Amino acid sequence: MPTSERSLKVAVGLTSLLAIASVTIAIAALFNSSATRPTVREIPLSGVYADGASGQPHYFVAVSSLGEHTLTGSMDFVYQDGQTSVVFTFQGSVQQLRPGANVAVLTLVPSLVPQDGSASQKRSSVPTAISAVYQGKGLSFGECGNYLHFVPSLAGCQFTHVNDNEL
Image 1 (spheres, rainbow, N blue to C red):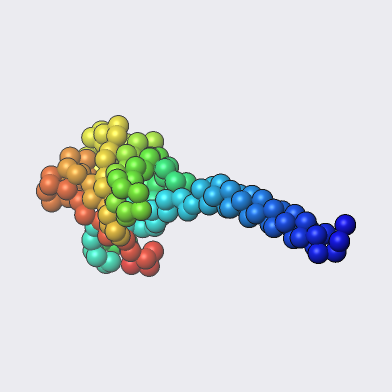
Image 2 (cartoon, rainbow, N blue to C red):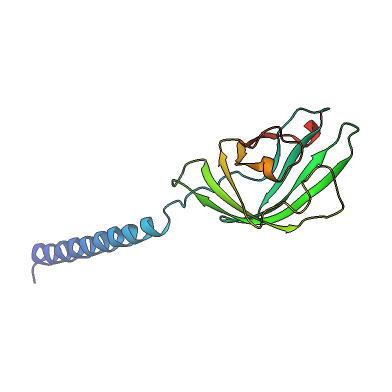
């Protein structure tokens, strides 16, 4: 076989191999891109939220995110003298309203409700499930005046994210 004919067969063979390799790489990239798409980012919920100013009596909520859809924490009260009391502890779930948005509905299930006659809660009035809305850096509890003694109205409680030293 002449050299030019052999070179042509080698070139055709190499071109075919390169075409097959390119198609294989393209298919692999397609499958890998769907497998490595970023997941919906987790809402930055963990932290402390307060409904009042430091140095004044107020409630605060400490929240720890346990994963994408679960949380735990406590509702507490800070008295004028700096003493605190636990109003209730809770476990709960988080349902993000829109993928990628910083808005979610929380369902809190109180797990420990001290019945020591604490002035910070209305005795035996803590519901079995509590709804709250997380938006941006705040929590809103609807009608919390039904179970939190020092809340001035039944309209709701607005809690803002604070640093631990701002309690």
